[in-house]
Structure formats: structure tokens, C-alpha cells
Image 1: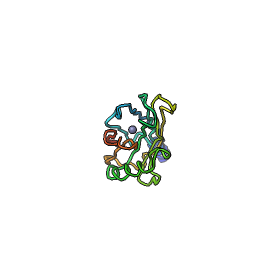
Image 2 (image 1 turned 90 degrees about the horizontal axis):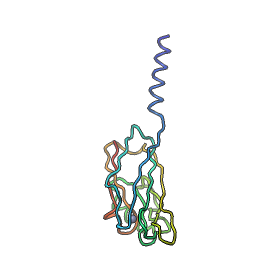
Image 3 (image 1 turned 90 degrees about the vertical axis):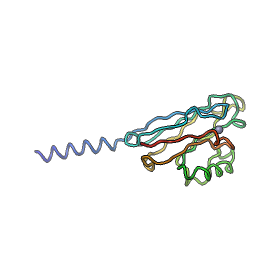
Image 4 (image 1 turned 60 degrees about the vertical axis):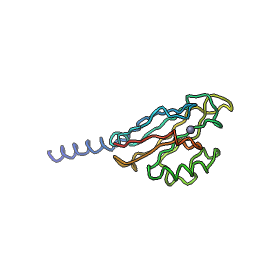
Length: 155
Ligand code: ZN
């Protein structure tokens, strides 16, 4: 009977840890070329996935003040930023080669015409993220990353 109980307990604990949970994060960009958060945090042990929602709180259109959200290793930031710019608006200013992109949203704009979507989201796995790793998120719209970037903390 004891072995049965042990197996049962081990099974319960393991399945508890492996339970998939999606954690929600939210960030918004404005007409001043700013994100409202300088850091975002995720607890890897508690969140197997992250659903990141990006909102545009401003009025300016997607053409003049578009924003997206791209997550990379900080070491890859400079090169991915250049690739994002090269990709152009048609590709949402997200690099065509996604090998260095951990996650990226579409490009969104404010309320002004041409009426665009003012909110978008992306869901990604935390599996490849390392605890204590150095990650950066930024907006891929040309010249925005200088102001629109932040630290993504994994604990
Ligand atoms: Zn932007």
C-alpha cells in the first residue's frame, strides 16, 4: 500500500509542476514614442506561456507612429533592430528571418485614419527563456527603439 501512496504523491507533484499556465502581460505605446513600462517580468516556474498584449493609447496613425513589440536576447538587439527596419511596414517591421526573434507582435497604430487596430497580442512559450537571462524588448518601427525599449526579466 505504501508504494502505491508514494507513486500517487510523486505523480501529483510532477503533474502540478508540469501544468501549463499562460500568464498575461500588458504594455502600451503612445504618441510620444514611449512604452508605459521600462521592465516586464515573468516567473518561468509559474508561467509556461506568456500572452503579451500591446496597446496603442495614442491617436497618430500606424504610418506615422506605428508600434510593435519584439523580444530578443540583449546581445541580438542591435542586429535585430536593423533587420526589423529593413523588413518594412509590410512585414510589420519584424525581421523576415525569425531565428533571433523570441516573440513579436504585429504593427499597430492609434485611433487616426487609416483606421488601424489599436490592440494586438502574441503568445509564446517560456521554455527557451533562461532564468536571470538578459532580454530586451523594443519597438521595431524605424528610430523608435532608441526610446522604446525595456528589460524583460525572467525569474
Ligand atoms: Zn513604435
